[in-house]
Image (tube, one colour):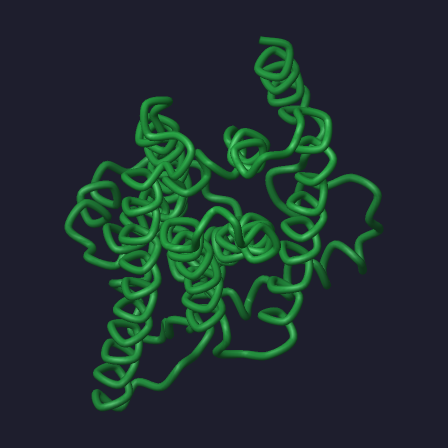
Length: 281
C-alpha cells in the first residue's frame, strides 16, 4: 500500500515535472529548443498534436504489430511473478535459512539492474539490435525456468545461478517499450499503444504469482513450466515482429517511395499512412 500510494503521488507530480514535448520544455534557449525539435525529425512520429482521433484507435486495433507487442508484454511479464515475489522463497526451498535466502537474493536485483542499463544502451549504439536483444533476454529467462524446473535440488549452485538470470526478461521489456513507441506514429495511436503495452504488463504481472502455489513447493514445477513456455513464445514473437517490420519496409521500398522526413512533425499521419515511414528493428 505504501509503494502504491507513493507511485500515485509521483505520477501526479510528473504532470507538472515532465514536459510533454521540447516545444514546451523549460530550460532551453531558442537555439537549443530548435535543435531539440529538429532531432525529432529522425523519429518520423510527430511532435505535439494533442487531439484525440478515434480513427487512429481503430487503426491500432487492426494493426497486427501492436497485438504482437501486446502479447510479448503479457507473456514475458508472467515470469515477473517468481522474480519479484518468490525468489527468496524459492532460494529458501534449497535449504537456506530465511536470512540467508534474503542475502542470496540480492544478486538478482544487481543483475537485473545492470542488464536493464546495458541492453538498451547497446540497442541505442547499434542499429537493428532491438528485436534480437528482446529475443536474447527471453532466452535467458527461458534457460533459468528450465534449470529451476529440471535440476535436482542438491545442485544448489546451479539453481542459484538460474535464480540470478531469471530476471533477464526485464532488459528485453525495457527495449520493447521504446521499440513499440518508435515504430508508432500519430499522437493518438502512439498514446494508446503506450497504454496498451502497460495493460499487457499488468496482465502478465497479475497472472505470474497465481501460477506458483504453495502446494507445488519446493519444485514449483507447474509454475516454471508456464514461465518456460511463455518466455520462449514471447522471444519467438519478437522475431515475428522483426520480420513483419522487414516485410513492410521492403514493400514500401518497392513502391519507389524511399524513407523520408517530409511528414516528420505531423501527428495526424500514422506509421501505416505515411509511405516514407520505416520501422526500426
